[in-house]
Image (cartoon, rainbow, N blue to C red; front, side):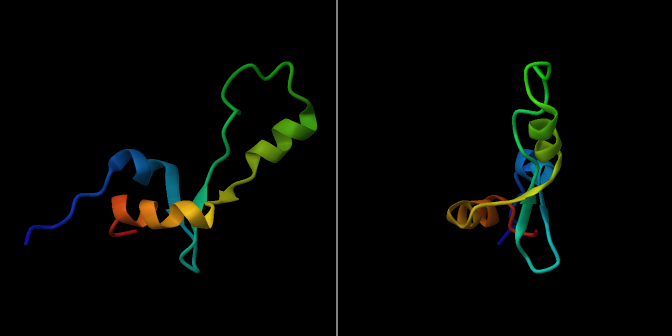
Amino acid sequence: MPKMKTKRAAAKRFKATGTGKLKRSKAYKSHILTKKSAKRKRNLRKPAITDQTNVKNMKKVMPYL
């Protein structure tokens, strides 16, 4: 059986924490920042934990993470 390939697009967007949860960055931070408040932009900087409903699919596309 050959090795499974990791989906590189997913690997660049997700990192595993020490406990095995998936960390991701938040969306809506790349452009049109002038109309967003400083508080909203500050909260977008913090990483988020991937929702449990998506973890099963993410483990499938990243088998070695």
